[in-house]
Image (cartoon, rainbow, N blue to C red; front, top):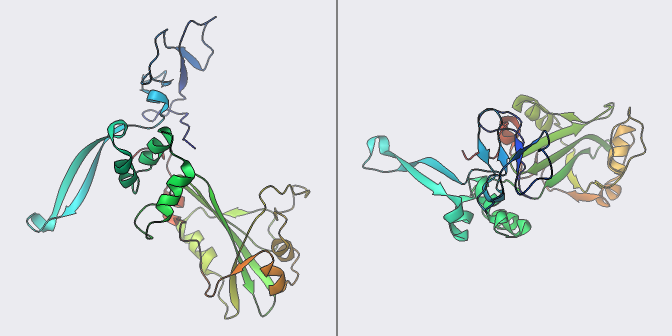
Length: 276
């Protein structure tokens, strides 16, 4: 459940593993000898270019950082006071880490590092009111939405949403597509999710069988074994009764699950583990 770090956060050079103990021979090309002494806080990664060392105690994220926030203060100019606070994740209590984890994902990693169950951590943040914490699930979340025209009985579009840690992905499929398309800009994303406009539009959420191994050749789109997706690709009708066997219909059309962050999809950066 913990992140892996491969490139140096300072200069983006490929990191090498630090190996400890009495080695039988020279270190491999991707290794550096760290000596015989090892402790819980010994680095496990090193940059051969700039010398950055990290993954202290098995961690691959910074445990010490400074966070700057703006706080409402009637006595301050413009009623805003800037506050700066230094953090050390290794010395914080679990309760403080859960609070910090509302907006700093590395606090959640620290909880896992201490042995807390990743699902329990996800459940805690899922149980908060929407907007009280960023949705950075340690365990991957997936959802598949079917855009169904009840008048024509045709599936017009299928969208899938995925989220894990700070990576949120959106892709969609329509009849005639040979593969799933990714939305790469916020404008494209909005065009896709708001493009279906019909008084007879219904939105269904279905379960995808991710263990299904399609026997299609490479020219055909994935359908995950879903009758609804197969019907759309074949431009064939499907009844609401058939759809109900795969998923659930929403009373009102919705565009995406509450946990999906379209901004996170667009703004994902090379070093997603650094605190912001």
